[in-house]
Image (cartoon, rainbow, N blue to C red; front, side, top):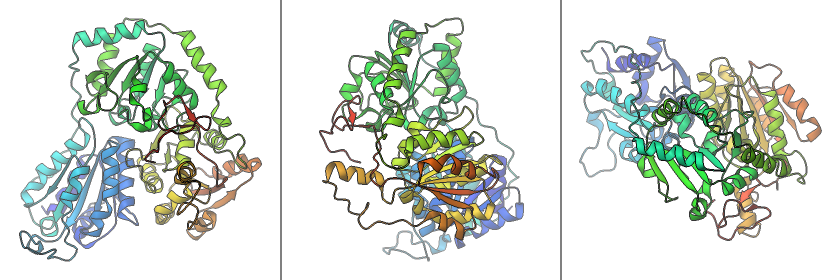
Length: 575
């Protein structure tokens, strides 16, 4: 069997339904094998970074590693941002890069390059992958593929890269076609009895307990277990940016998002809590603010994570529980099966009072034009058929996370750790393929959307049901807000020297239906237009005020309960 044929057969056996790529000479054998087989969809993107983001979205939506391919040299290097995004946000993915023939590689020669486009991608990828390997012999392929898919999904998921020379791809190997593989079942929890007793004893003693859930719950494919656990314990839940979809918006125990741009009432609730159970959240500076000691305070914190290094990293004094979240939640539900937990009505009423006092739609009540938080609620009301909201990076990301009403069967995908502008359009394409016929809502800013705008052709080519909402404020809003705070409103390269096109006209060039709206009285009708045909792509440009800021925002250097615009930063943040 030809090696490239074996690779395609292996991908089929692992349930891979589509591969994202941009063509190049060093993956020509793989592309031909994919076409000859015809069992896996081949999605030709228009930039390798976009192929990587699309693969990431598939991995996050399905749990099956997303697969992207690129040719050697510039193709492989262009994958790196998306590979890093998978690594930081724990998304399972396998990346396959073509490499020049082995006899064209420089080896130990004291030269920069021998073969055309020869580039050693493996050492570049190593810091942002769970593993990156050069394939040296055709016979290595079966075991390397097996190990790559196992690594991508086990424990904390992430990306794996295989770099395969062209002459290896076309070699013949004597091996049977791979059989369909099943993911190994999770093992039992190894948490000791004393830890369980301490956890539930201190939880029952707490007057104002909270659960903080992070993206680790989705990465562990443990969302259903998590929801059962929360309802069993009857504890209010705050979420990080990466866990907006951990609970449905209408779940009574859902409080809201915490962090730098968190819902004001959620940050205030964190400040008042006397017990915190952290599940799959890194407690980084965007979640806690700069004052890690203030975040810890006198409260009891139990921190559950599959990686011990994430616990007591910034926020110290936490009780560590090193465990996969599926194992932890399964064991916890078993242990508590016969127990009843207090409702703590006074605590929940206190949180509800904070929510009523500080509604998200009032944060920009005085801003002219369309209120972004109001827009997100309106968009949610029209988008109940969507399988996912895919959100880019910038101010719109914060407004979406603050105010979207994500349903129980909907996903919220965004770029967290990498924070890469340009994520949303290709990721929405990946999500659309993963969700089959269900539509996807894309939310982006004008800056981020331009970063991978070429993928409008991919949407148009496949007539993907992606509903694109572009918040156009004519600037790079988040950094412009940063310049307003720290650089006396000198807006170099965010407003001064920056421009954006009319995205409705751009979409028209791709034959995608599009329109614009800038009057708040017309937004509801415009959103109904967006959804006129759920099976077709459409783009709505929403013009908002250039100087609208994302509020609330932790006043950097202060505790997370002190938020702009009422409090002012005392230190300069990184972004």
